[in-house]
Image (tube, rainbow, N blue to C red; front, side):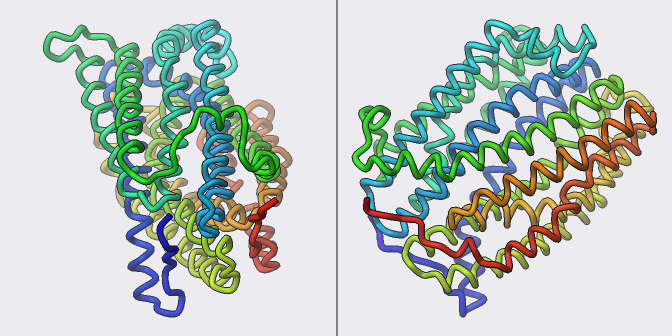
Length: 458
């Protein structure tokens, strides 16, 4: 393993320069990944609004899969970063083996479910038969991608931990470019390819993920990234790694499903408010996701940098680095919010098959995203990056679950189905979650319980 190199906290210029080396490729990777969903929506929007809405709701199945996968990847980042800081390659192999064990298992289950009962899955999100039929077509073809993602994404995560951030970004970005090109070919039937519409978008996803799988395998073989050893799927050298993995991952899983289930309920609420609300919400969510790429990149970088410092025993340096990430997250959030507001008129000018009503909803949903992203940037960096870096995963679980399920989701249901408020008012209520929890997040941050080295030898 290479020597640990941490950004110099005392030298502001050196710190931000070192941070950019890590965070910019991660931001670019998240941005490119967001473009896949955007390209699906943009291209399908040229066909008809029903296709756009159907794929948007079918994408919620992928979202649920990512809740599982992100649990394992966050657990891998928590332990992997600290053991990289400690310079323990055997522990890193065990962390990778444990991560792949569960990600591949869940990937296989989702592949089987989307092949066997896609109609049942779609009925969770809507009762519109046209959207259900379109979603079924999409899910049956895209099913294999879950197993491929279960192999690719853990390795992209470990590349970041092993100081191969640029390599991870290049592979993921190439996969995105290929996906977008194949989207155009198969959705519209360019060249000799048939015009497949929704099914074309699904096929493009599967083929691009397959190519990513090949690229990852070659890259790992030719670099010093932690290697995949099949025996590690069954037996670990350091038995306590498995226990520690679940000690920190289980609260993350509850958090993911508490938060993710709440976000999915947003789609359920909008899905039952009609096609116009669903289409507008899907486009607004895509725009927010693209702009949130910077926030997520900062969150990932915070988790890796702070985790490595803690694993190396540099506790004071890690505490000060955490403070810099908090301030930076607020600045990133404000700038991102201004960008959303500035580009809203441009997005509304893009020709699509959206109705006039849906376009009106979209305008207000985008403007709401301008303030929503400020809270999202701060909370994702602190709850998703800084706290887990020191093994503090329980606070995020409690904070997100209480905020969503005790406040925002009940208010959203009441607003939509009891008070019968306008769609825009319902959407406004569903953006409150990030701001409700800020006071609790700040108080917990200042206790510094996250400043902890969680590595061990036995």
